[in-house]
Amino acid sequence: MTGKLYVVGVGPGDPELLTLKAVRILREVKCICVPKSREEGSSLALSIVKKAINIDGKEIIEAYFPMRKTKDSNKSQVTSNELKNKKYPEDLSLVTEPALSLSKGHSSLPLDCELDTKWQETIDAVYSRLDKGIDTAFITIGDPTIYSTFFYLHDGLLDLNPELNIEIIPGVSSINASASRAKISLSLADERIAILPANYTTDLKNALERFDTVVLMKVHKVFRNILNVLNETELLNKAVYISKVGMEDERIIKNIRDVKEEDLNYFSMVIIRK
Amino acid sequence: MTGKLYVVGVGPGDPELLTLKAVRILREVKCICVPKSREEGSSLALSIVKKAINIDGKEIIEAYFPMRKTKDSNKSQVTSNELKNKKYPEDLSLVTEPALSLSKGHSSLPLDCELDTKWQETIDAVYSRLDKGIDTAFITIGDPTIYSTFFYLHDGLLDLNPELNIEIIPGVSSINASASRAKISLSLADERIAILPANYTTDLKNALERFDTVVLMKVHKVFRNILNVLNETELLNKAVYISKVGMEDERIIKNIRDVKEEDLNYFSMVIIRK
Image 1: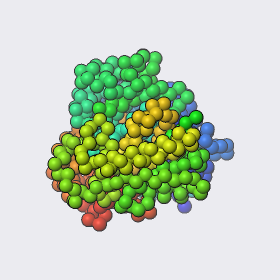
Image 2: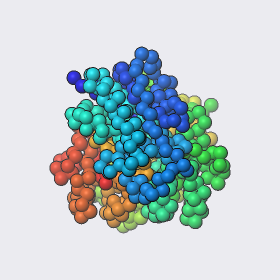
Image 3: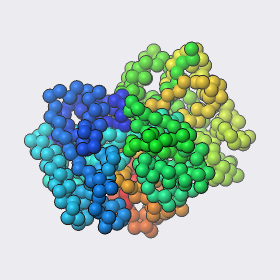
Image 4: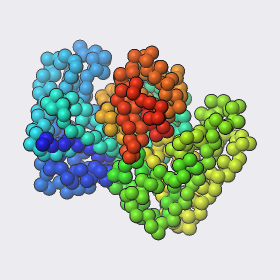
């Protein structure tokens, strides 16, 4: 009997935001696979789990997802469209752009070979446990369906065994947690929500016109651009900045003009509620 | 000392998707306020909570949110824009359009007077407990910031006491739960998500063009229109229908052409992943 793979969303940071189901499964499994990035040094998802349950005696597979520095990158020949079609993990890319890897369905560029190998190593490591009948949990911060790493492994695992038993356990996403902390309703009645990375300035204007609520992810690198667009569209007063929701150094800044350079970081978002 | 109001998201239906924090708070509070609609007869949110904790000895305030039948409505003079600017609870309107009520900041139409009174009764009932120092939980299915009822009460409660201590506990939203069950990633990397009620056909086409993932809520009444738009845009093969996620009669229909009239209900959505 092949083991079952549980993909478990562990919520945004507060260990109390784990679900009962996540806790039960993480207690039951013998093996936990944790995404880990070089920049963090340790897994944020695992640190959340450790606060809620005792992991002594469990095997921990550290899935190292290599990142490529943006500034050092010599990949300027990659067009934005190619970037868009590539899959890469977001919740690991604290200070760098993530590696372009696991480009299933797209021909890999030569530079990606080493990175694809790393991904394949993680797939093989997880699969070898499942193949021995060991139930395994792959943990991911927030919710597994929102900008999380698991789906980079999904197809590779199914390639090895199309009958693999995979269950995805949803979690509280950082978007919902941020709105709760800022006491903002994301939507009522017939309202429309757009969730988009902050780097599309044209899309931002369009979204601000057409949607009642716009959630901007990855705001740290383009924060001044966002302020400019919000100023032009007279929406500065409707925007809230939330950073590291549910973590010890959480920040909620209701007047977005007060956000300082040192407040900006990867775990941040802006919610604009018209 | 005034009591604290906890607004608790109880997840989409599976009691195991309650968070540890939700369970702790619901155990601690002496009073739980539950939204209830005439059509359901009982509160779905309370039925979820009852499966997870023992509520014996707690006071239950049933907040009856009156609904107005769509077909019987003589409110055809209300424009769609007026409708959009009105606030009304979504997770209660199982078979009818919800009542237009609690129109803070908008002048009430005469027909709304009775409904506003009902809302005010709920505000007063909750506030009277808080005023006696009784911590109270207002429960809502899914996540409190996504199409939930609480924000209709929020302003009214703060009108009574601007210093009121309110904490919102995020929950697993039905959107994330549905994507998990259908094993769909809503977003990777730089992808964009639009969440919109299904009744805006023009917006739907625009969103399908501009967004990588479109989540359509309230699909049951306009399902044929959705199929037509998906057919025109050649996206029929990219759409999944999910109904009553986490409930006993959950349905996941991966080929949207297979959805039958009897499969359609209020607790359903379509996720289009391009």
